[in-house]
Image (cartoon, rainbow over all chains, first blue to last red; front, side, top):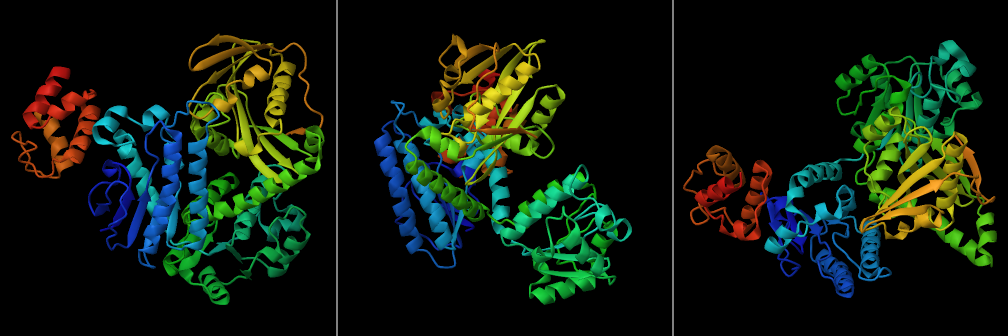
Length: 528
Length: 72
């Protein structure tokens, strides 16, 4: 048996029946021997939120009981909980949400203490669908399948991919070439000041890539260098080039000489006392890549086009394929820090009587940037993942974003930082021109973690002023209701838009851009 | 139409020998869960929707076909 699945509803269409065993619904009294277990519970469908939240509270106790009764070598894949169906009758009823958050937070903690646990973020799958797609009532009433069996095919593809990720052996060490990998150009020919890093393209691509690698290093990946160069030149470049992000102190070991790279990589492995099978080699030269593939087949050698703008896709591939097994604990580490920063923010809030003083003291910086190759992925991702502060919940792919850009739709992302930390890109707006002096707000969304500081209004008003300067006179907007975006139902009302049409699910608005909109002066706003 | 139905049935019940005499009574794998899979596949393949009452009746190849003929 490959997996034994603990479940509380009909999920056979999703996990299939070959090599898989199922518990009874909600049953943990029988625990057969298996190498791997899956914990797939989802809140049951009951209109009484109190009942559901209590039930959810019990899941964790059940899971712990099971963990006490399975072998120390077994593996338990736990799916996070998501809300498949929840209709709070009163708007301020968050019992189910908080029970679910509570369960998820507890299993994040548990996963860090108990090595047998692997987490799978189920919302990664469910967030692709609308509420009506997730539950098919006909099948629910006839077979108790809460999750729509029609999604089974897509689920299987996603789950197969997740299993691969869970099974991957994480690599430990990245071996980097230098010329045209860490910087543009040949150091030996162009000199310390001549190599391309920093400034405009292609230098900016190398800067971002180096910053990304630095993050990787900070999360525990060993960085090494293997390059055909004069060591003295490289040491000088690391020390003297002002744009260099990765410097000598970030590189754990290096072989900078004219010896063949296979020998060098073997020496690096010995020096660091790690296996060759935990190394990944990056080089722009296909001949060098081929050499390593042939001589050291246990070293992973990803393809790289050598084009500077392909470095970030390469980075993503490195992370996805080699340096992240199941990322939750790592992500959690980052989140913990953000949470800590949030705690500090809260403490600061307590010290000020006046909200305005507090907001001023945060020294909030809003950087507004148009869509580009580097933020396009994030912009598309946010449309897919943001559910709560999302006015229209249009889901877009990266290609959709590119196409809209080509069609002349202004798209801006906002990056938010304050004196407690940088939240990165956490919001976006997509506008569609309509005629000469009119625009439609197609998408307006913000990540929940930056809310509560008036950033939403500052961002919207900044953009409105920007387009007003460009001659736009009227703006159309709408709010499309979903199960999760109730908190923004009156956002446009509060922003001074005039309501034109209201139906059960949609509110349409119009705004005349007469005079500049006033933005609180404690926001430092910049355009990139 | 027979072939399209049989292909789906053979696939879901994992039995290449299935023919037009197949029914819930003589096909070991045709339990309630495989029935659900079968209905999903048929709905997708023929672009139709079955009512719960219809789903409950579709217990033999002949009845499946009859139901599809009435809808397509």
